[in-house]
Structure formats: structure tokens, C-alpha cells
Image (cartoon, rainbow, N blue to C red; front, top):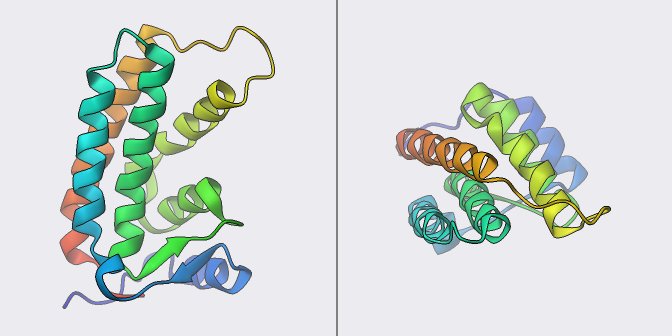
Length: 151
């Protein structure tokens, strides 16, 4: 079994104490399953390019699943209060720049899903950037997964 990941340990402990993350057990700690879901969601998004906003949402979800896979592998999951921001904070604390693009994608996805103006459509260029960023996050998560022990 891999040892507990030490980088960002105090940040993760604080997130658990605040209720932004919580512990999970058993089959829910199989990060590989979530990473497979991330790959499927990314392929679906890539094939929906005729609807850039819808495709972006799918691609963002793939990135979120890749991040959540790492947390699951550590026996953690975001809570309702921590949500997607909690995922972002946990990635930044533990893994640094490898998941930096998750932040802009999360903010952009919120603009698309909860528009405050009528002109929030995702451009083809934004979708291409999101696809490339998500591929990198999935690849990075794939390399990290076997090195993560339970938190």
C-alpha cells in the first residue's frame, strides 16, 4: 500500500475539520473507477463539438472526475459544503500546477450553467483549450493514483 501523501497534508486536515472533505471507505475508494469515468466523459465531450457549451460542461465534468479520483484513492470525497471549490483547493494544496487549469474551467462552467448575461456561449477555442487541459489532468491523475495512500 502506498504511504499517505504528505504534500498539503495540513491543508487537507483543515478541509476535513471544516467539513469541506469527508472520509469514505470500501469500494468508494477506488479512484481507478472514477478515472475511467473521466476518460469516458472526455470522449463524450469531444464528440459533442457541435454544441460547444454542452461539450464544455462534459469536459469540465471529466476534469472534476479526474480530480475526485485522486481524493477517492486517498479515502476522501468533497462534501456539499466543499463542493467543486473544495476539489480545486485540495488539488492545489496537494498536487500544485498539474491541476491549475481546473480553476478557470470551474469558473467558466459556472458562467455557462448559471448565466448572468445572455451571451455566455463557449467558443470553439475555449472548448479546445478545455479538452487539452483535461487530457493533461487525466494523464497526471493516472500517474499519481498508484502513489496515493489512504488519508
